[in-house]
Image (cartoon, rainbow, N blue to C red; front, side):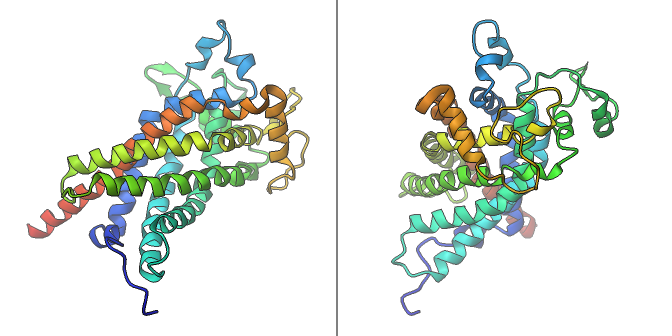
Length: 340
């Protein structure tokens, strides 16, 4: 083990930031992005859905594409905060541990890829049910539902002075008979997020290193946010564009998760006619691919690529800029408190 020693700057986050700082910064970053970028994600989901041409395309339906852009945001906020805290805590700890135990011959990019992959596996366990509910809610037509949903919400909540049905609760009502179906998209989510983070984080870390070369920004919140937003925007856009085909398949699988509950409608989606076992149905991804190719051919795998690249780049810029800036703020606040 003589050739094993800490890398330059390795474990910086762990030495300067407490686990509590990392969790708080990650949760705050996720909350900020959810509120700012969510409408773009809703439009992307609708474009990638199998009913896009029927419900949202064309001059007569175009307005529907831009309605209810915050449908389902509640379920995401509740799950994103703990899942993001879990991701960043796992990522920082994994990166620090691997940097301090593996030989220096291992490239840093490999360390970052491995750390982000481990963190993603933990995060997706928490995020999957919310992601399924979110995408189900995003394509709802936002009409009052039957009385079976009252048991979840009681009276309807008032939003901006208008009585409205909670789309998150409507989506949840579809899974009352088979709640385990909420985890049906786990492998689809992991299948998208693993290559995304494996591409994004090494590129982000590389760009951050390049942008900070010769600059002292460790305790400067404004410069920290600026550098991380630039690196995050570039890394997020590149990774999002390259993983769009996997994202389209993931969307189809998650939107088909409640196929059996659609009353009075025969479902032709990937999950149609399958008995719920709480496990991933065999052939569901193959069926989703076949459905996409039947509708649009190879170009169907690239539906929403421009929008995905835009919202991922913008989202990651805000996400990582807020996260790293938040860590600097919490470190400074902690030091001032100790000095007082």
